[in-house]
Amino acid sequence: MQYTNLKRIYFIGIGGIGMSALARYFHFNNVVVTGYDRTETALTKQLQQEGIAIHFTDDIALADLNADLIIYTPAIPKEHKEYNYFLANGYPIRKRAQVLGELSASKFTIAIAGSHGKTTVSSMIAWILKHSGYDCTAFLGGISANFNSNFVAGKNDVMVIEADEFDRSFLQLHPDIAVITAVDSDHLEIYGTQQELEKTFTEFAHQVTEKGKVVLKSSLPILKNIKREKYSYSINDTNADLFVADYKITLSGSQVRLNNGMQYKLIYPGIHNIENSVAASSVALLLGIEKNNIISALNVFNGVHRRFEIMYQNDAIVFIDDYAHHPEEIAMFLKSVRAIYTGKKITAIFQPHLFTRTRDLAEGFSESLSIADEVLLLPIYPARELPIEGVSSAMIYNNILSPSKHLMEKENLLEYIQTQPLEIVCTIGAGDIDKLVEPIARTLKQKNPQL
Image (cartoon, rainbow, N blue to C red; front, side):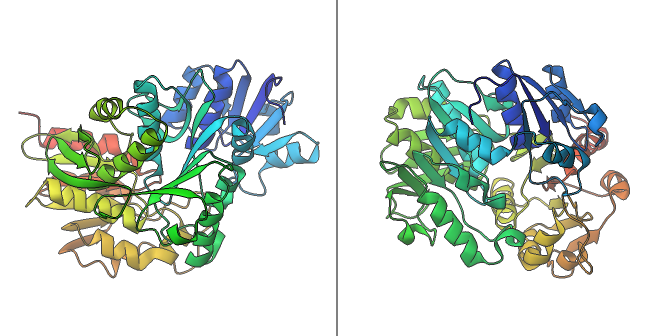
């Protein structure tokens, strides 16, 4: 499909992080963009402030019936009225992934996939390319602190795309460089088994162009199955092409030295983010960007919204917010918190995301959350799913080994925070737990005012 002549595009699910980046792209290119989303959020408010009209009721009378194209997210329910109207009346309809695949077909595309880490790596790559003058257009799965957006406009033919494995969306892409950060069990409601997930990631790697390259973590089991030019990276594997020779974590960030002599400081905390920086550096080096330019970019990389984001701190307490919603992500996050704030009591407030994910990974959630000294478990955020009988946060709660653990409703959380002794407070999850971040921060400020 040709996108250059489109005048009006209507988005169903425009408030999603991936959909909103695409909406911003077309808006930037002078297309009239409007859309629907189920819930008003800070992101939808930003889109409205940028000039994109959005409504929050599934009502065809409110939709743009003159749209040249309808773009939808697969997360919408099958009975969605607007979607079914457009489908029945012959409107051109595309999934977000299809549009990205077609937009990037004629571009030099760098696609970053993985069950975790992909948003940070995508943001790091985009920042290095922009900061060095290489330039790019980027579609990110989070709000980059450096760009204050999930969309970055560029003037050349290079595209950086965060590639989503949900619904096998990333198979729409044919990248020149594919990056794979992790292949941990997730979206098993789609894939069924870990083996099928690995098979699909391998298929994604083989989507690269004839002279394309694959950059991936050296410990991934799929590495041996990939029959393309490949480059490995690691935080600790000295057999990888690029690895961390030495690092030191402090309260002010991480000092990192790579085996190729590169040395830089990350002000963005977390052991996992050291590894993410190696992945991003691998891509930049393959593009021929000078080491000094990579170093200078990483030195001033400010991270991604809701990724180890410090919301409040003083001498008595630290409050960190993180998007982690998979057991491996939570474990890496809490291990990093433990490494930075040695000897401090860690209170983890976790909202599970999806009934299927909770059902499939409950044991892993229990194990990773047990790294914290105290766990406050909120009810499951359903997102696109209906409840599953017998599946609740109690499945996780029962096997948590932390000295203190509580099943808690949202409305009781602030009172608990106000009355209990706390040192390191962490909100964790991909649902609407972000709506609690500001109230928690206010409560902690009142309880522990900055000295």
